[in-house]
Length: 156
Image (cartoon, rainbow, N blue to C red; front, top):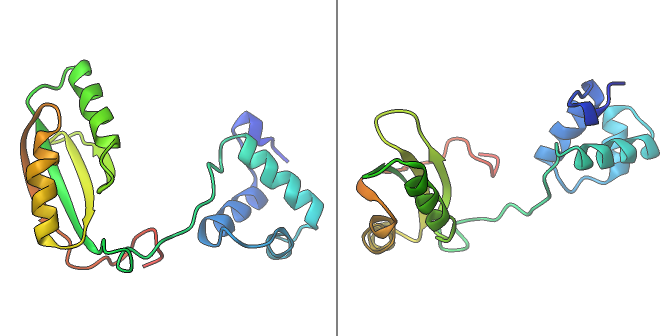
């Protein structure tokens, strides 16, 4: 077997990672059974994959609708300044905004793409006007409203 510490993983490691990505609460005995290993070697592999950084953590997948956050918008953001200090200021400010679920720097016609969750369009409009537009160096935004999540991290 190739060591995960050297950045290489084998087929059994990949099967373990796939199972954990889809069903993070599976008991080790069930993971071992599905991968074709005994419990102890499977536990050793999981610990090694965690230590090597392949597994970053475990978390619950929450239902946004039950939490009043079912409205999804994607926001293109153009900055007025794209020097390193401006990018760092924008990145730091975005990390503090709970309604911004994801933020990606983009190579293209705009600088960032944000995924924003809110209760409804009115709540989003307030977030856009009071929060996103006030982020450092924001020159303009363009909003795209999601009508349906066909595939996302919740298993859709």
